[in-house]
Length: 173
Image (cartoon, rainbow, N blue to C red; front, top):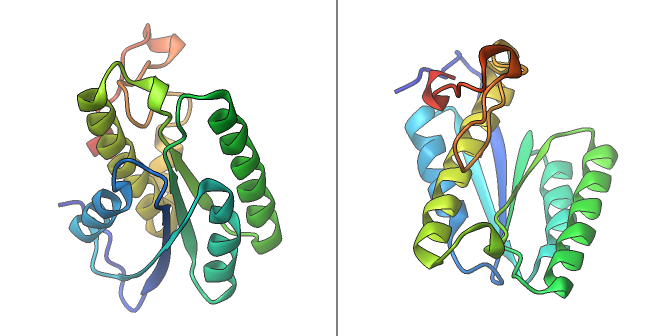
């Protein structure tokens, strides 16, 4: 277990997901966060669709959360891609209005070749972004150590062009 405990430093994390998604990524992220630290309070909310994520994240950040994670699973259709883009724009605005991070964890259905790979990708992306959230809250210097290393959340890392594209194992964070 990575140690992310600092004395008297309880943080609040907003977890916001949708009923539109085909997989419960938020539960995987919560599980990963609990493995990494006990110094957090998690507040989870579920909204109907992607375009509702921004307002719920903003509400929770305004109510005292330190950071938020927004989970969505856009479908394969063009309208789904458009809605994901609009949701992303809303999340960007919420970030600026609150001056706090909202980690966008979107898994597009057409990223995977089948449902088995889609489930694998969704879980992995949720867990890897959860690690990023804990680093942002407690040890941001961990992220700086890996700047320019071609890390990806979900599929394999592509690696740095300076290192010949060799990936870095994420759990080192």
